[in-house]
Image 1 (cartoon, helix red, strand yellow):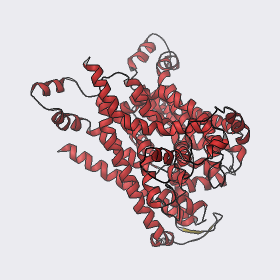
Image 2 (cartoon, chains in turn yellow, purple):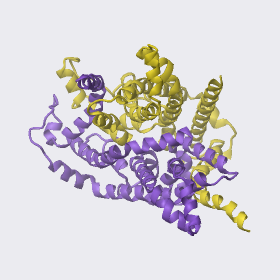
Image 3 (cartoon, helix red, strand yellow):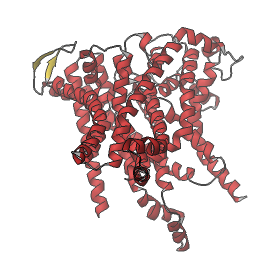
Image 4 (cartoon, helix red, strand yellow):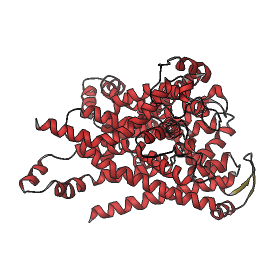
Length: 292
Length: 275
C-alpha cells in the first residue's frame, strides 16, 4: 500500500496546475477548432459545419496576405534588430565599470512598463501638433516642419517596429548577460597569452559558448513579438486604412469589430501553426548543428 | 585611472540608447505636471511654467483612478495566489520525484507558453460567455493564473532543484515526518524563490491588456491599462496631462520593484534554461 501511495503523490501535486491550465487553455483551443470549421453568426452561434470554407475565405482576403507579410517583417526586423543591439550591449554591461548598476537599471527600465503604457506614452510623444518628438527634432534643426508620424502606414509601421525593438532589448540583454556571466574567465586568459585579438576572442570563444543563449533569445522573442498586440493597437489600431495591420490586430478586428468569427478562429489556428512549425524547425536545426 | 577612462567610454557608448529609453519617461513626467494650456500649445514647450501637481488630483477624480487601481490590485493579487497554490506543489513534484508523466507534463507546460492569450482570445471569450462571466473581473484572475502557471512552475522548479534534498532526508532521519520536513526545512529555504515568482506573476497580470480588453465591458471593472487606454483610444479630445499623470502613477511602483528584483529573475530563468 505504501509505495503505491508514494507513486500517486507527484500526480496529486501536479494535478491542480494541470487541470487549471488544461481547462482555461485547452477549452478555448478546442473552441477555436470547432468555430473555425463552422459558419458562425455575429453573436457566436454556430450555424452549420462548413469544412475549410473559413480558411479559404481568409486566404482569399488580400488583407490577410498583407497582414501576414507585415507580420513577417514585424517579427523578423524586431527580433533581428533586438539581437543585434542586445549582444554588444550585454558585453558592454558585463564589463567592470563605474556606475554599472545604474546603467543596467536604466537599460532594463522599459521591461517593467506594460506595452500598453509604453505605447500610450509614445502615441503622445509622436503627436503631430503637440508632441515632444517633433518639437525636439525642430529645435535640433533636423526637420523644418512637424511630421504626422502616425498618419501614414509607411511611417507609422517602421516607428512601431522601432518601439518594438526598444521594449524587447531589456529581456534579450538579460538573457545574454546570463550567458556571459556563465563563461569561464581562464579560457580568455589562455587566448590572450596565445595572442588572440579581442575580435578573435569574440568569434572563437564568446559567440560559440553563448550560442545556446542566442537560441533562447531568438525563439522566445519570435514567440513574443509574433504575438505582440498592444503596440500597434494603441498606436494606430491597425490603421490608417489597415496600413499597419499585423496578424494579431487583423485577428482582433475580425473577431470583435467585424463579427467574422469563423474567419477569426481560422486566423488564430493558422498563426498557431506558423509558431509551432517555426519553433519545431528551429530547435531541430539547432540540435542537428550541435551534433556536428 | 584606467578604469575611470574605461568607464567614461562605456557610458559614452551607452548614452544614445539611454537617451531613447529615458525620453518617453521625461515626456511622461513633464506632461503630467504641465498646466493644460501649456500641454496644448503650438509650438510645444518643454518645461512647464509652474509645477501643476493638481493634475494628479484632478486625474484621480476624472479618471476614477482609485477604482481601476483597486481592480488591478484584486486581479493581480488573486492571480498570484492561484499561481502559487497550484504552482508550488507542481514544482515540488517536478524537483523531487521521478514519475512517468514528468516529461509530458513539462512539455504540456511549454506548449501552454506558446498558446498566448491573443491567439486564444476568441476561444477564451466563448468560454467566459458560456460560464456567464463576461465583464466579471474575478474571471480574469483564473485566466491570468492559467497563463502564468507554466512560467511560475518553471521558475519555482529551477530554484527548488537547487535546494539539496539531503537536508530534508536529514530531517526525516532526525524524526521529522514528511510534512514536518517540508514545512520546517524546505519551505524556509524556498521562500526567496516563492517571493520572486509571486512578484513576477503579479507584474505580468498588472500589465496584461488584451484579455482585459476582451472580457471587461464597464468602466467600474476596468483594470489600469484598460482604463488608461480608454482615455486615449477612439477619442477626439484627450486630456494628455491627465493621461500622463495616470500612466506615471500606474507605472512607477511596478518599475521600482522590478528594478530591484530583476537580477533574481535572470538567475531563475537561466537555471531553468540550462537544465
